[in-house]
Image 1 (cartoon, rainbow, N blue to C red):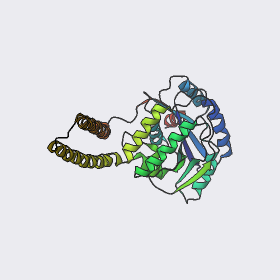
Image 2: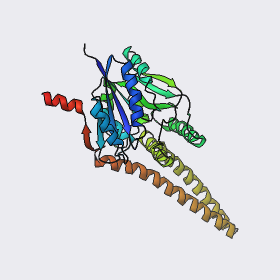
Image 3: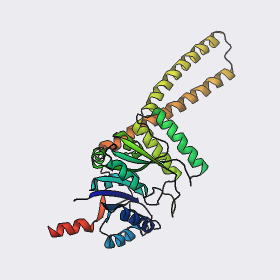
Image 4: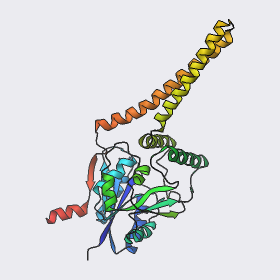
Length: 321
């Protein structure tokens, strides 16, 4: 009887401290799930430390370990897509190797999908243990805003850690945009989903690779990719400014006729003019962001470039052929 296979996409950027710890934990899970075949595809996003060297060492000992080494740092979203396109499993998941995505959840996820009632078994953190107060506040505000203005609803606490059937992943691969936003994309694809709750876990080692600067950029990408609200807001703002301008113009004409236009009135009008100019510049900036996204998509640059592939299992099969 042919066993089903689970492909795990383990994203890696400067994770030399966590790789072996993660592998040891995954070995325990793979031993428990001995009725299933596994492949762990490390996506090395051009790490600057010994991450790739450690992965190669593990791959020499365990043929289930594979690696795609990218030519430069393409980011989390591109790394995920590279893994999706390379994976050969019947079920596929992405996983953070800092163990904030608990490997033991895989057992429940797999059993959930085996019932055939669901196509996706997704992890949902019920707490934010290890996050600072300001970080928690930013995340909470982001989810409130994005769910008000976006065409795709996101769940507060949702993780990209979710086991999906081959059918789901095949549909994900069809998304060809360059500015990916996986938190929404994984929901946008649809299908029947089962949320599996757990308490958030702190990183097992190392530091976060997602600082505030990247977090802000990521949030803007999501808003632009899945919402036209900023553009609608510009139109509404323009109408409001037009009405105010007309009222001010009429007021100025009346004051001129009554010869009561003073320096204060002139200063007030100058201030309003400056305010309107600032708002216009902000509006142009918002539209420029959308145009920039279009510019990137039209160029059709590759989402990622693979510098080196490590897959001893596939190599041995090719040699036998």
